Amino acid sequence: MEKELVSYVAKALVDEPDEVEVNMIEGEKSTILELKVAAGDVGKVIGKHGRIAKALRTILSASTTRNGKRVVLEILD
Image (tube, rainbow, N blue to C red; front, side):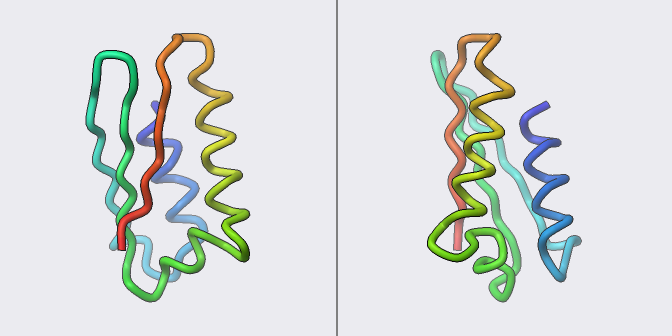
């Protein structure tokens, strides 16, 4: 669910939605989501002063509080 959520939001933000990739790495207590976008779209996903990235992380933490697992979003260059 978290993977689809990040993918959906990222595709809505970028100019090249076909380049959006989300890899999920499951851990025991946490999950890491690696978001990879086209080189020209990295700034659009991060936003001014990291506001969009922070908002994405807030949405993720709100959606995963009920299952007790922590989700970490990493935006790759």
